Length: 363
Image (cartoon, rainbow, N blue to C red):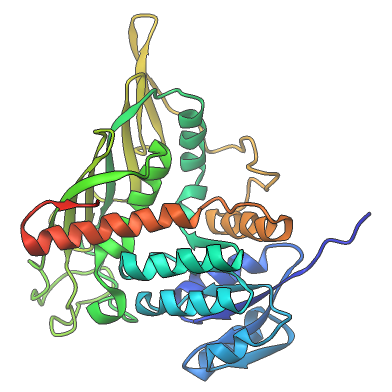
């Protein structure tokens, strides 16, 4: 039996998303080891190395020193949004394959630099959209590919929280993040929607962005009251997107909104043959034999495994496993950088339209 190459991974940014998703999920992947950790706060990198690293794992405060280690195959970029682009480009230029946390970058110009660097270096690049790897998402995608929905011409991308503003890290800092809920959770819902539609050709969009609740003080927020002085990003943002073929998407995103329709990183699609939403797991609706039907797959028991995974795998573990397999086998990752680039372009268009008060045209 041939030896399976062990993929050596370096982690840049050892904060919330690295600890909450990337490092625990990578730990579950076979023939993969985390060998280097970098953070501007050395203590965070040291803790990560002790918990997730191999024996003798290196610790850095300068990411460029990590990149100079020729034995590292893959780098995961888990830093604030502003630094996604230049760290990813440097990593690709250093000969590493890169998984960058979402969103791809703070704007389309920065995202384009990442895309160009991946093409120039021939290295793989993917963006962390783990919502694609939930059981309901994978099922809906299989149905879409089988033609169950026909032509999908209307969709809703929903990421609505009632009062769940992230008050830690740099989430509220517009300079570091490039935006609030739209770029943070709206990005997941939009990625999922475009992926289901398999449509990456936007024509124009109209957007509105609100700062209506930022100054509230007794907020009943899930993670404690936010500081109005620091809350410089929007509390909610909405977009109306028209694709080149006329298909239309409504995007709703909020961290704080007076609503009971609380759903995050989900999509609703309507096609010529059937439709689907992610309420109650997944509901597919249509007409068969002259009768309306609603079909709800049962996700409480194991289904067909996605590329030989275990049915106990979390979405993050599946995302990491398939990514490491793509690197080992030299094949395209599930989340392609061109797709993530389109998401960033649309998010930027919504912000720009909100600023100008006019539709934003992509070409």
